[in-house]
Length: 313
Length: 313
Image 1 (cartoon, each protein chain N blue to C red):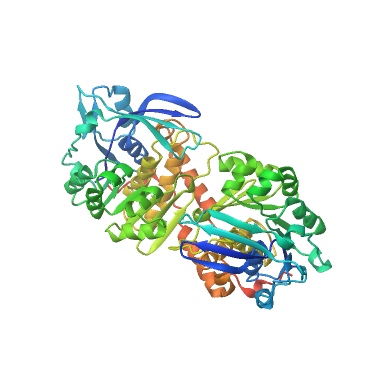
Image 2: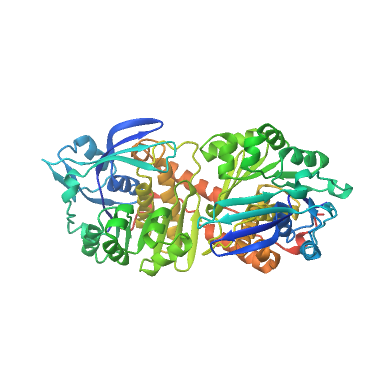
C-alpha cells in the first residue's frame, strides 16, 4: 500500500518581482509527489507530452516516485502554465494556460495503484476526481483539492465529489466561495456537514487550520523574511500532509495535527526558490529542524489565572 | 504598584450588519481597563465631560478601576465616535469623530500613578504618550499602541516614543505602514531594532504574533461563528495582555506567551456583544475555560519523522 496522487504535471513559466524562470517542472502532481516522497512511497497518475524529457523524468526517479501511471503522449505537448506575481505574492496572475495533452486527460489506474491506501485528488475537473475515487474503493483516506474555476463552473459535480472524500484541503477564499458563507468557522461547519471528516483551510502567510466535527487546530505559517516563488505551495503542503499520514499506522487526530505541521514545513521550503528546486534537495534533518521550530513557535504553558496570584502590587 | 493606562474614555455609536447602538461606553482606556481589571488593579488617566454620568462611573467602580486621574470637565462634552461596520467586520468606517474635551487633553498623573509598575500608552497623540512615559521613569514595563493617523502625521514623534517603550502592540497593516516594509517578519525585525524588546502584531481573525529579538510566537484567534461588534477588540486584547503580566512576578517570555493567550481570550469575548457589554460580566471560570481551549487548539506532539517509521506499506 502507498500514496496515490492524480493531478497535473506541467511546465511552468513564472515571473516574480525577484526573477523569472521560463520553463520548469510544475503542476499539482509534481509538487505533491516530490514533497510526499520524503515520507512515503508515491505513485503519480497524470499525462505528459513528447516534450517531457529525461531530465524531467529523472526528478521523479531520484525521489523514487512511481510513474507507471504517468501516461506519455509522444505527439502531444505537456500542459503549460504562465504566471506572474507582483509584490503581493499571495495573488497569482495567470498570463496563459495551454492545456495541451491535459485537455483530453483520462486518468488510468494500474491494478497496483487501485490498492493505494491513501489518495490525493489534485486540483482537476471534479468528474475526473470522482472517476479516480471510484477506482480506489478500499482506500483508507481520500483527500481532495479544488479551485474557484470548478466551484463556479461545475459546482454540482464538485459537491458530489466532496461527499465521497474524507478530507478537503482548500484555501480560505475557496471555503467561503464554496459555501457562500463569509464567516470561516460557519463555512467549515457547512462543508463538514456534506460528508468529509476533516477540512483543512490554507491561509497563506497566516498558516493553516484543521476542522473536524468536534475539534479545531490552527497553526501559523513558518516565518520567512522573503518569499521567492509561491507556485505549488498548496500542493507541497498537501504532499507533506498526506505523505506523513501515509507513514503512520493510525490516521487519528494526533497524526493529522503532526501532518499539518509537516505540510507547513514542506510548503515553507517550497516558496524559498523557483518551482520544486528547494524541496528537491531537502534532508530529513532540515525537515525535522523546522518541525521543531513550529513547536517553539506555538508552545505555551497552561497555567490558569488565579485571582490569588495577584500578590504582586 | 499596579497597571496604569492612558487613553480615551468615549461614548461610541456603532452600526453593524446585526444591529446598532446609539450611545455606549467606549474608548481605548475603557476597553483596556475593564479587560485588565480581571487580572490586576488598574488606574485610568483620561478626561470626560459633564455628560459622563453615574451609570458610566459605576462601570469602572464595579471593576475596582481607580479613576482618581480620570479628569472631569463639567462644562465640556465627552469624546464621541460614530462608526459603522459592513459585512467585512475587519474594517471600521468612521462616520464622525467629536473630540470635545479630548481635544485639549493633558494627562495628569497623581503621585500614586507615577509609581505604577506597568504602563499602557493607549492610542493617543505620541507627544502625549511620551509625556506620560516620562512621568513613570521607574516602570518595569511600558507598552504602546498607535494608529495610521499618527504614523502619517506625527511620524518623527511616534518614532521617538517607540524608542522609549518595551513593547509595541499594533496590527499588521500598521506594522507595514510604520516601516514601509511589506514582509511582516522583516517589518517586525526593523521595529525591534528601534529599541522595544517585544512587538505584538494583532492580525484580527488570524490571531496575533509576538516577536522578540530571538523568538517568534504565533497564535490563532479563538474561532467564533459570529462576530457582533469588533469595536475595542485591540484594546481589550492589550488589557488582557498587560493585566495578566501585571499579576506576574516575572515578566519573562513564558509569561508574555501566556499573556498573549489571555489577551486573545478577552478580545474574543469583547466582539460577541456591543461595546464592553460581554467583557463586563465575565467570570474567571469563563476566562480560564477559553484559555484551556487555546491549548487544545494549538497543541501537537513533537515526534520527528524517521524514515524507518515508513513500515506502513
